[in-house]
Length: 144
Ligand SMILES: *[C@@H]1O[C@H](CO)[C@@H](O)[C@H](O)[C@H]1NC(C)=O
Ligand SMILES: *[C@@H]1O[C@H](CO)[C@@H](O)[C@H](O)[C@H]1NC(C)=O
Image (cartoon, rainbow, N blue to C red):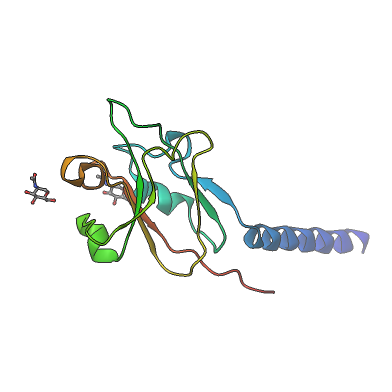
Protein backbone atom coordinates (compact mmCIF):
# COMPACT_ATOMS: atom_id res chain seq x y z
CA UNK A 1 0.00 0.00 0.00
CA UNK A 2 2.68 2.44 1.11
CA UNK A 3 4.93 1.26 -1.72
CA UNK A 4 2.18 1.74 -4.30
CA UNK A 5 1.50 5.26 -3.05
CA UNK A 6 5.14 6.32 -3.27
CA UNK A 7 5.47 4.87 -6.79
CA UNK A 8 2.59 7.05 -7.87
CA UNK A 9 4.23 9.99 -6.14
CA UNK A 10 7.45 9.42 -8.05
CA UNK A 11 5.54 9.19 -11.34
CA UNK A 12 3.77 12.47 -10.60
CA UNK A 13 7.03 14.20 -9.81
CA UNK A 14 8.64 12.89 -13.01
CA UNK A 15 5.67 14.11 -15.07
CA UNK A 16 5.71 17.51 -13.35
CA UNK A 17 9.45 17.93 -13.95
CA UNK A 18 9.09 17.00 -17.64
CA UNK A 19 6.29 19.54 -18.08
CA UNK A 20 8.40 22.17 -16.38
CA UNK A 21 11.32 21.37 -18.69
CA UNK A 22 9.07 21.83 -21.73
CA UNK A 23 7.70 25.14 -20.49
CA UNK A 24 11.00 26.80 -19.61
CA UNK A 25 12.70 28.79 -22.33
CA UNK A 26 16.24 27.58 -22.92
CA UNK A 27 19.41 29.23 -24.15
CA UNK A 28 21.42 27.27 -26.69
CA UNK A 29 24.88 28.09 -28.01
CA UNK A 30 24.78 27.33 -31.73
CA UNK A 31 27.37 24.65 -32.49
CA UNK A 32 28.01 24.07 -28.77
CA UNK A 33 31.73 24.31 -27.98
CA UNK A 34 32.45 24.73 -31.72
CA UNK A 35 30.55 28.01 -31.87
CA UNK A 36 29.75 29.55 -35.27
CA UNK A 37 32.56 28.55 -37.63
CA UNK A 38 33.40 27.45 -41.15
CA UNK A 39 33.18 23.72 -41.87
CA UNK A 40 30.95 22.59 -39.01
CA UNK A 41 27.74 20.83 -40.03
CA UNK A 42 25.01 22.99 -38.47
CA UNK A 43 22.23 21.06 -40.17
CA UNK A 44 23.39 17.94 -38.38
CA UNK A 45 23.91 19.82 -35.12
CA UNK A 46 20.45 21.39 -35.13
CA UNK A 47 18.76 18.05 -35.86
CA UNK A 48 20.42 16.64 -32.75
CA UNK A 49 19.84 19.68 -30.52
CA UNK A 50 16.25 20.54 -31.34
CA UNK A 51 13.38 20.94 -31.00
CA UNK A 52 13.19 24.60 -30.11
CA UNK A 53 10.32 26.46 -28.49
CA UNK A 54 9.07 30.02 -28.75
CA UNK A 55 11.19 32.29 -26.49
CA UNK A 56 14.22 30.02 -26.66
CA UNK A 57 17.45 31.93 -27.28
CA UNK A 58 20.10 30.98 -29.82
CA UNK A 59 23.59 32.31 -29.09
CA UNK A 60 26.05 32.80 -31.94
CA UNK A 61 29.68 32.92 -30.80
CA UNK A 62 32.45 33.85 -33.23
CA UNK A 63 35.63 35.89 -33.05
CA UNK A 64 36.03 39.44 -34.28
CA UNK A 65 37.11 40.02 -37.90
CA UNK A 66 40.77 39.16 -38.51
CA UNK A 67 43.05 38.15 -41.35
CA UNK A 68 41.78 34.62 -40.91
CA UNK A 69 38.30 35.86 -41.77
CA UNK A 70 35.04 36.94 -40.23
CA UNK A 71 31.55 35.64 -39.65
CA UNK A 72 28.14 37.21 -39.34
CA UNK A 73 24.51 36.10 -39.11
CA UNK A 74 21.78 36.65 -41.68
CA UNK A 75 18.17 35.54 -41.87
CA UNK A 76 17.24 34.30 -45.32
CA UNK A 77 13.66 34.92 -46.43
CA UNK A 78 12.56 31.46 -47.58
CA UNK A 79 13.52 27.84 -48.14
CA UNK A 80 14.76 28.40 -51.69
CA UNK A 81 17.11 31.24 -50.80
CA UNK A 82 18.32 29.04 -47.93
CA UNK A 83 19.01 26.06 -50.22
CA UNK A 84 20.82 28.19 -52.81
CA UNK A 85 22.50 30.62 -50.34
CA UNK A 86 20.86 33.55 -52.12
CA UNK A 87 21.37 36.64 -49.94
CA UNK A 88 19.61 39.19 -52.17
CA UNK A 89 16.65 39.57 -49.79
CA UNK A 90 18.50 38.48 -46.67
CA UNK A 91 18.39 40.47 -43.46
CA UNK A 92 21.59 41.03 -41.50
CA UNK A 93 20.89 40.30 -37.82
CA UNK A 94 24.45 40.26 -36.41
CA UNK A 95 27.49 42.01 -37.82
CA UNK A 96 30.98 40.51 -37.91
CA UNK A 97 31.84 42.38 -34.70
CA UNK A 98 28.88 41.09 -32.67
CA UNK A 99 29.93 37.48 -32.01
CA UNK A 100 32.53 38.12 -29.31
CA UNK A 101 32.26 37.82 -25.54
CA UNK A 102 28.96 36.29 -24.55
CA UNK A 103 28.03 36.12 -28.24
CA UNK A 104 25.08 37.42 -30.19
CA UNK A 105 21.69 36.40 -28.79
CA UNK A 106 18.68 35.79 -31.00
CA UNK A 107 15.32 35.10 -29.34
CA UNK A 108 13.00 32.83 -31.34
CA UNK A 109 9.83 34.87 -30.94
CA UNK A 110 7.80 33.78 -33.90
CA UNK A 111 6.22 30.50 -34.89
CA UNK A 112 7.78 30.26 -38.36
CA UNK A 113 10.93 28.82 -39.90
CA UNK A 114 14.05 30.89 -39.27
CA UNK A 115 16.72 30.36 -41.94
CA UNK A 116 20.10 31.36 -40.51
CA UNK A 117 23.28 31.67 -42.57
CA UNK A 118 26.68 33.32 -42.58
CA UNK A 119 27.05 35.83 -45.42
CA UNK A 120 30.84 35.95 -45.43
CA UNK A 121 33.33 34.60 -47.94
CA UNK A 122 33.82 35.20 -51.66
CA UNK A 123 30.63 34.20 -53.48
CA UNK A 124 28.99 33.35 -50.10
CA UNK A 125 31.38 30.45 -49.60
CA UNK A 126 30.72 30.21 -45.85
CA UNK A 127 27.12 29.32 -46.61
CA UNK A 128 27.78 27.26 -49.75
CA UNK A 129 30.93 25.34 -48.85
CA UNK A 130 31.32 26.03 -45.15
CA UNK A 131 27.91 24.57 -44.10
CA UNK A 132 27.26 27.72 -42.03
CA UNK A 133 23.49 27.53 -42.32
CA UNK A 134 20.60 25.84 -40.54
CA UNK A 135 16.96 26.44 -39.91
CA UNK A 136 14.92 26.40 -36.73
CA UNK A 137 11.16 26.22 -36.33
CA UNK A 138 10.28 27.08 -32.73
CA UNK A 139 7.16 25.36 -31.39
CA UNK A 140 4.60 27.19 -29.27
CA UNK A 141 4.42 26.38 -25.56
CA UNK A 142 1.29 24.40 -24.90
CA UNK A 143 -0.69 25.91 -22.04
CA UNK A 144 -1.63 23.14 -19.62
C1 LIG B 1 25.35 17.44 -42.67
O1 LIG B 1 24.48 16.72 -41.84
C2 LIG B 1 23.28 16.34 -42.48
C3 LIG B 1 22.35 15.74 -41.45
O2 LIG B 1 22.97 14.79 -40.65
C4 LIG B 1 23.62 15.38 -43.60
O3 LIG B 1 22.44 14.97 -44.25
C5 LIG B 1 24.56 16.07 -44.58
O4 LIG B 1 24.97 15.16 -45.57
C6 LIG B 1 25.77 16.63 -43.88
N1 LIG B 1 26.52 17.44 -44.82
C7 LIG B 1 27.80 17.23 -45.10
C8 LIG B 1 28.39 18.10 -46.13
O5 LIG B 1 28.44 16.38 -44.52
C1 LIG C 1 29.21 31.33 -57.22
O1 LIG C 1 28.61 30.10 -56.83
C2 LIG C 1 27.69 29.57 -57.78
C3 LIG C 1 27.16 28.24 -57.27
O2 LIG C 1 26.71 28.33 -55.98
C4 LIG C 1 28.37 29.35 -59.13
O3 LIG C 1 27.40 28.93 -60.07
C5 LIG C 1 29.02 30.67 -59.59
O4 LIG C 1 29.76 30.41 -60.77
C6 LIG C 1 29.96 31.20 -58.52
N1 LIG C 1 30.51 32.47 -58.93
C7 LIG C 1 31.81 32.77 -58.85
C8 LIG C 1 32.21 34.12 -59.29
O5 LIG C 1 32.62 31.96 -58.42
